[in-house]
Length: 137
Image 1: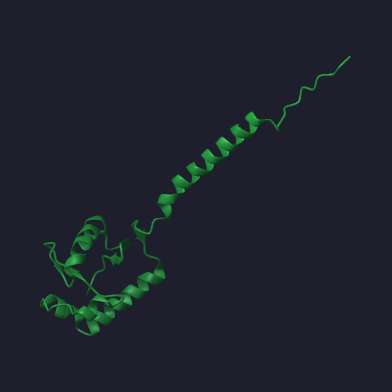
Image 2 (image 1 turned 135 degrees about the vertical axis):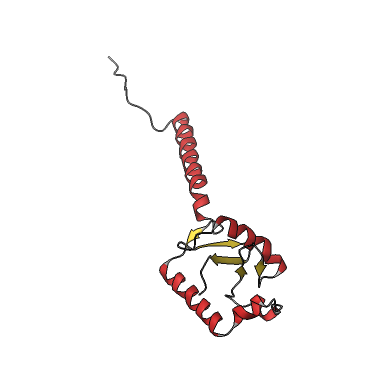
């Protein structure tokens, strides 16, 4: 009498195709669902060290009268464009002071989305990083 084996053969071609399909499908699904969270262009909260750095830069700008020059509509020099951190002011009417023309659209979009002074945020627009809003006393 011949015994028939009733075990599942893991070595068959159909099982390999089935396993490869579900493995690739699940890995691509995991990548596609986690990829948006790795985007640097999302609005993100500032950590305490970044917040302290920006408050120090604001105090430095007030100390060196940079805000007075911005309020008086003095033209921002090209040297200021390449400065890593520089203040930009937005008045109550939405007029942006101290920004270059190519940055004004980014700042306008940022100010519409991030308007809570108690929880400043940051976002990167192409090569321009914007953080704020901050209060100036």
